Image 1 (cartoon, rainbow, N blue to C red):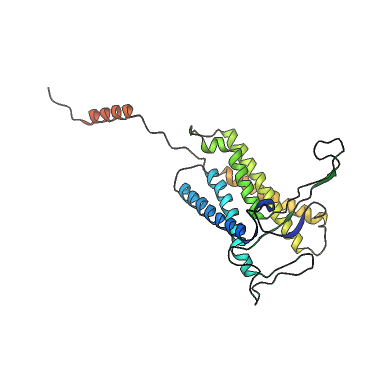
Image 2: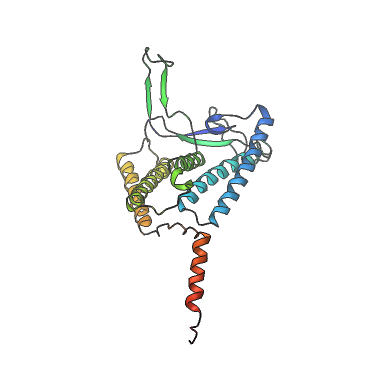
Length: 267
């Protein structure tokens, strides 16, 4: 789409932002095993919470984290077995299911990242502390949809943690419901724009994209955001379960009930 959004193929041997757990095959194996255990734990927590009367937003947040973790681990577990080695600099394209086998063994595959957003470029002035005189680029890391899913899920947990994990479970006011619906509608707009720009970039024969195609992307994304707002507007409002009555009140209620239901005696 120009100088701010690229599809840039990168094979990441480690975690987010290229961080690695140890060196060599041993570190990669340990990281893959850790991911498997983490995905299993998150999946069990998600399954458990769906059986309880919890706020739907909590299910959404945990599901985003689970889906992102599962997406990355599929690359880590299987990608090295299904694809041959590739080198973007020499234009050596990876082959699917090569006769000689994949480039890595089971649990040793690399995670594929592809989205690059160098939105801001510039140069720090000499007087700037720590980075004076150096170039800066934001956003430098290359990531994938799974990374974005995990990041959004964790971000939402942090923003709404007071509501999701508070012991004082009370109904949410109309104003807060409206603000939450607007927030998720805007999030749907951003995600739709993200996916539509990816599709347009892959399908278009000319780059950067024309102004008409960019306008079409934002128009369709706006429709998706409006649809999300209408969906949430008609979605049943979460009502927290009523707290259990204290033992004394429960006993008094039972006594009154038994007294009211007893037959009257003739004098």
